[in-house]
Length: 233
Ligand SMILES: [Zn+2]
Image: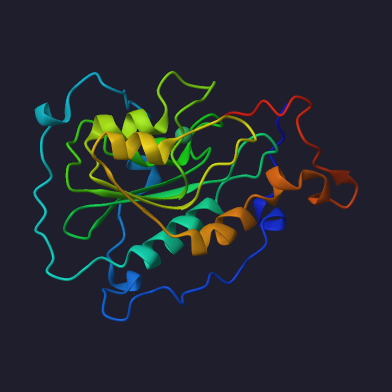
C-alpha cells in the first residue's frame, strides 16, 4: 500500500553544500530553464530499444565554450526531487536533462505524471523520439537497472535515448533492488560523474524511505513502511 502525503510538510528543506563548485564555470542560475507548461508535455511514450539513437533526429543546439556547472545542476536535480510526493516504498528522485549546448531540455521527478514513473523516465519522456547524443542527465539517485513497475529500467531508457553523460549524487542502496546503474552505463560507453558530497542532500529528501517511522504525516498519523519493503523501483 502506498500513501501520498503532503510533501510540503514531509520534506524538510536543507542547505545543499556548494563547496565543490569549481570557480570558473557557468553558474546554474544562468542556464535557461525549459519553458514548456506541464499541460503541453505529452503523456509518456518513451520506449527502450525500439529505435536506435542513430535513427532519431539530432538536437540542433550549439555547444558552449565554457564547462557546464555539473555540481550546480545536480543541486537543481536534487531540488526537483523535493517535488516528488514522499511515498514509503519509493525513492523521491529528481532529474534534469541538459543539451550539449547547456540548455535545460527537460526536468522530471518521481511520480510526476504517474506513481510508478521514475524521475529519469519522466524527464526522458518529454523528449521521446529525440536522439539525445551529447546530452547530460543529472539525477539525484543512480539510475535503476532493476524494477518491478515497468519492463524498461531507467538505465535502459538512458541508453536507448543516446544520452552521453550521467551525473549523479547517490548510489542506490539495496533496500528495494540491487542496481548497478553506474557500472552498466560505463560498460555501455556513457560517461558517469558522481558527486558523493551531494549524496547526503539526496538522502535527506528520502527520510520517508530510510527512516519511515519518524516521518510525521499529520498530527495523528505516521507513515509506516510497506510490510515487505517491495517498492516501486
Ligand atoms: Zn528508474
